[in-house]
Amino acid sequence: MKITRAALPTARARRPGTRPAADALYAPPHPDPAPAPAAPQWDLVTVPARQGLEAVDILRRDDATALGPVLHDRSCDTLGFLVPPGTAERWELPGSACTQTCARPAHTRTDPPVTGTGWLLAPADSAPATDPGQLRRALTEATRIIETGGPVCG
Image 1 (cartoon, rainbow, N blue to C red):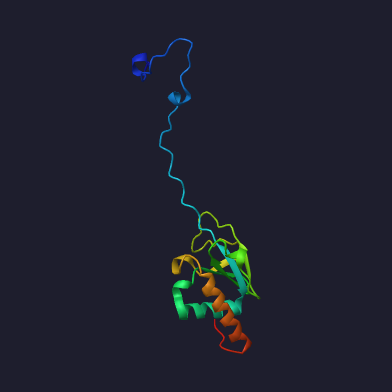
Image 2 (image 1 turned 60 degrees about the vertical axis):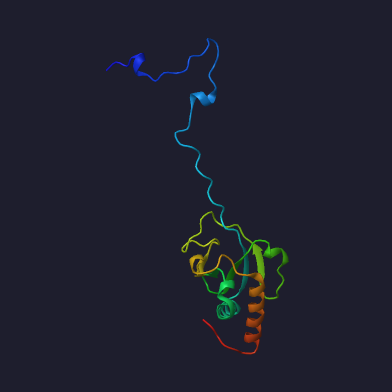
């Protein structure tokens, strides 16, 4: 089969010695995709597992809407509460630490945002982030329970 000039798509005529604009030579086959939604950003409050489990029970009992996703380390020594960004800048509670984290682009129930952890409460099971004020209150109460030999949860 012979390709003839008549079978080729027609192009706009151009003057001799001029070059067509780059966008005239190439048009992307599809429009630019919509930007991916921003990854959730969190800070992470870490506490010893016993204190964290007590705090989870307190938050569930008092105000379950204040409790967001919770991580555990694989050795079950530490729990991590995902809290809103900016919490680390003003967090001061003895026996705990709050660090800024970089969330992975797409966390899932099986892929938490911190390497070497698993979900105690996955994002689909809870609020977007734990309320820092409610968490502080629950951790303080949990410390009192532990110091007085109160209930063991878990």
